[in-house]
Length: 265
Image 1 (cartoon, one colour):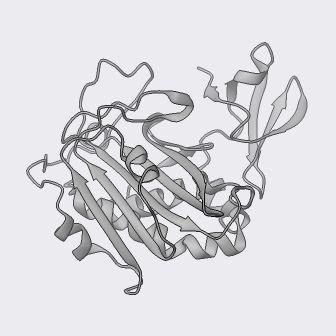
Image 2: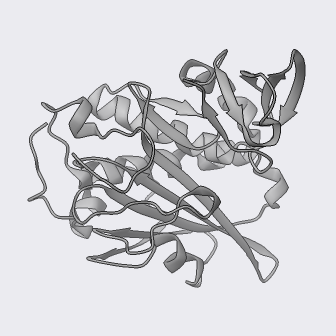
Image 3: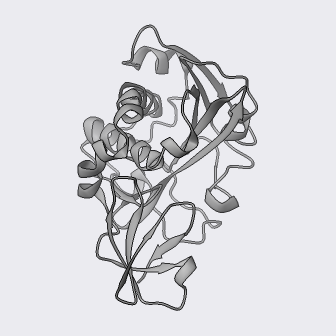
């Protein structure tokens, strides 16, 4: 991959590459440094039929799942949050993080023919190593659901001593590709925007077949937080986005809020 770090994040470039409904207002802000793009949008007033987009070259308090830190070195990766207001209850968004992961996978495949996999419910993998993650945060404002989609993708990062699990980046796996973060960010925003209403109407079940093709967990032995002393195998995912596990030869259904799991080596 040609290192195109010289292509700084640029709002005009990102807007120019967007392929979305022209009536949809996109408020885009880019920061050289911020504590957390998700936190920024959670505290920002949002409106229906608008997308608020926050991107940073660096985060000092990047958020991962379960309160973990998302390592966010400067000008190496993508730290992107997308916020909106939905006329939905949180209970109607089962499988939403998987839907977002699928949109990122579609963007990578369309632009670069990269075939990424998804580790339920919100991680992105290449060559059996994590290179991206998704964090969905919500709050109710004036009886409307304000939602923020946080996306972190390792793009140019070559080393990081602070990450305590196997990881990779697009640079490590595809060193001869030329990737402009502005184009990739724009493509991800477009994919999410153009398919969001379909998800809200049909739910995750409309995307289940696509996920099944990218499900890195299927039939793999896993370590599960709620069943730490049991023999666990991940099976398939249901139409509501829940995961089926085989726990000591008994089938169990779990949701993303109930457990965390790792692939067993």
